[in-house]
Length: 288
Ligand SMILES: [Zn+2]
Image 1 (cartoon, rainbow, N blue to C red):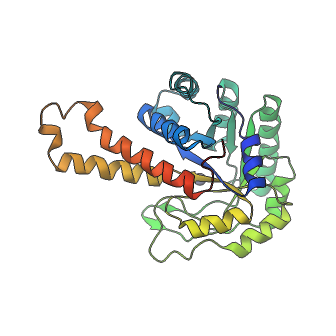
Image 2: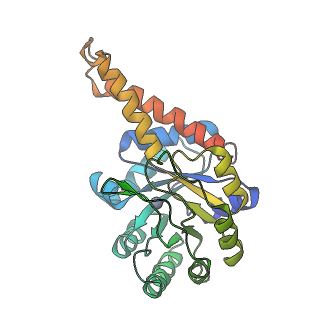
């Protein structure tokens, strides 16, 4: 089965009180590892690329072809959606055109009026082609120039304005942060999450910056309406760590240890193990 829209898997997760893992991919190896992990755990999945990652891999069309070809050649039977993460207006339009099955339009840096206008347009274009859409309200905190801001909190009224446009799932800041969480992080703001859930009439929500949030917090977020959790940093960290250990142990200097298939194997195994752990932790394993 080629890639599918994320609407059905997200709605099922929303009803069943679990969250679909949305893993960012960077290359062929990453994509294979994610697919192996979700197949072995029978997890419906969203594979996503930032615009930068898609460019790094050769372009949006290449990513569509790669994911569809891997699904076919690896015999993947679980539902897989291919999603654009933090898309610009132009990027989202392009991805809808070339075959992504889901897109995020992130208009959070525009005024709320402009965000509404552009979101409306992307939703119409996407839905005409059966593509699911995520929009964002209010920005997500993160590290810029080495300074980590505490997570931002979205305004429930603004969330309602975007939700009412017919978006399929909504990203809103509830104290979450992209990248590594600082030691003094205050945690997710469940009060604000509950207020947003109420304002948007229980539409599925997306938790960005899911790397490193303790499972007891993600579980509570899922009970309050989060149905998609984004994971990027966590897989990067385990990959880098395993690769560093291989090199530091001098394994690349033993025999043909320099062969990229050998050199990247510990990192790939680490990605598979971590992805499986997250599928279980989000309650999505076995739900395919
Ligand atoms: Zn994000």
